[in-house]
Amino acid sequence: MSLLEVRDLKVTYGTGAAAVPAVRGVDLSLAAGQKLGVAGESGCGKSTLALALLRLLPPTARIEGEVLLEGEDVLSMRWGRLRAVRWAGASLVFQGAMHSLNAVHRVGEQIAEPMLVHSTATPAAARRRTGELLEQVGLPAARAGAYPHELSGGQRQRVMIAMALACDPRLIVADEPTTALDVMVQAQILRLIERLVAEQDIGLLMISHDLSVLADTCDRLAVMYAGRIVEEGPARTVHERAQHPYARALSGAFPRIGDPASRRAPRGLPGDPPDPAALPGGCPFHPRCPVALDVCADQDPQPRLTGPEADRHRAACVHAGLPVPNSRSGA
Image 1 (cartoon, rainbow, N blue to C red):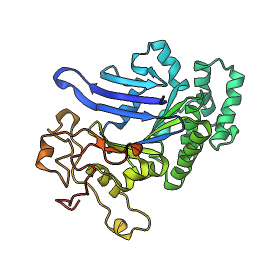
Image 2: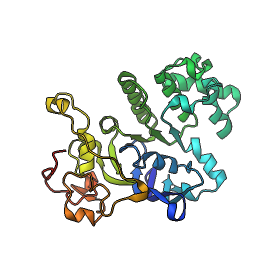
Image 3: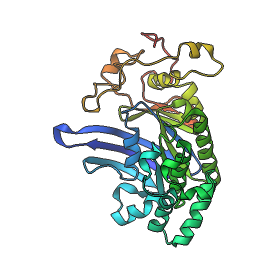
Image 4: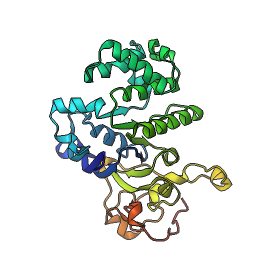
């Protein structure tokens, strides 16, 4: 049984004529000890997906489908059970630690709070565990007495990770956990996350707009566009031999070390993602696609296997599994 199984997840904001589909039928699975990356541009539905996993969306959002956490559907849980699952079953690491931490409380108090609320830990036990967690993420236990503004960006992000681990969850969802960090600190945080996943046999769902970071960190990659998964498979395969034109564009947007051509002329992608309230007909990517066919304006293809079943590499494109066609625009 998978640790996390997402089945036909749909999230719509608003009602009636003003309804906006933010997530449109997402299927994902994640095993314990596995790292799954979700990539895409801003506005593709990544953060909505992350928040939907623990029903953290506002009341204006309508959620359909199933989110099975160790076989139990989060979307149908009663409030008491859901409250118990948050932090203890699954926890989130948000982007922008300074916005997530309370500026007027010491970080040790904030790490201890989930333990006091969601477990039977005494204040003394919670303080001891806080020191252990800080050391586990590479900070001295004495930093528990610091306020968020007294820590660097990398240290604050480590505090966020320690907080997420406070109640020993089976799943961690990290939404852009390194966005505001410099490259050196980013690398340290990513290695820390990898180590913790391996040591504690937890599942990690990591969200980022940076396909190269996810390919270097995760076992598998899922690429989102206009609220749907358009490609999903082994991380290196998706990054280096993507089948969907959008995934290829994301991969090509970052220069590769040792590849002078990509460094001098990194490939980009013209235009912007479509407005979720006014999606084009057919494949939502076709207005920006350099290899679109006439059929792409009429048909929105479902993901299909592009290689051996063992790889479970799927792409939602009419070109999937075929030789990469010539670009009509050179993008």
